[in-house]
Image (cartoon, rainbow, N blue to C red):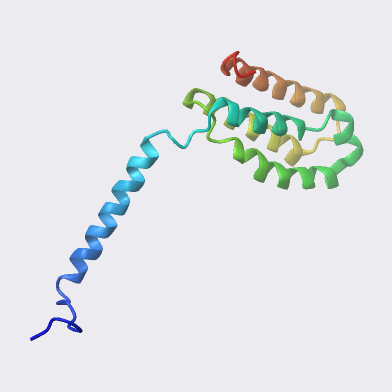
Length: 139
């Protein structure tokens, strides 16, 4: 009697599915712990520089008003999130804080020049912290 065309016992199939799920979960866990998904500084630095270039100056924010801020808010939420993960775990916090601050500037979209200047100054301080965390060879 040939086994061709016969189906496996239904009782064995759930075990295979469970095993496949367990193997997949272990693979995902192992790959997320490996750190290999972090970009090198050489790969990440151009993205970081492009992200900083997206930040308008205070005058642009005042002139562009809410329309500019709304456009930038959408761009920031997409483009700046690409900065994570950063090259090192130590930079992830400051980069995340920089992104959150940049998004909050355009979300709030102040019409007060001194408020905008203070917000942009804080963004510069955070950027300096990030730049300080990059190795001097890569800059």
